[in-house]
Image (cartoon, rainbow, N blue to C red):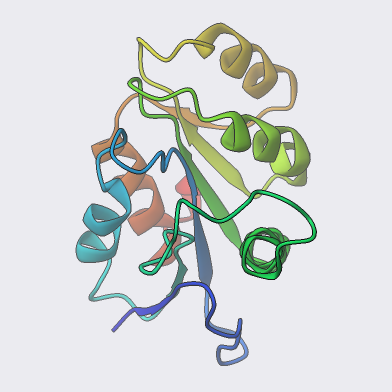
Length: 160
């Protein structure tokens, strides 16, 4: 069964357990809760899912390095992505996802990422060019992203 870790939980899991980070649009109130769909679809697998969607997020937190809650959230996300075996990134068309774009730039060259950027995302062209340039696999839909992650987690050599 999948283990789900969310901030501020410590990033601890058994050695050898495949880890998957759910990167992409969050935009509370705008983006669909696509991470929950991922968790449900992969719940039967022996993996650790690193989900940055914090259940107790407070939108009143000042987004400043000096705010310990905000800083801890950002540092958790960065550390989780650095340690994940696979980063799946979803750009919801109804969001601008500036932090996801930043993370694509930070982690895209690591060869541990797969991206879904559907038509309608405001910077789809930029995402497509970055993915083509750095050989980052792309899929066409959230369902295909879930399928890719499942194939990776079950060891289907053609998917990673």
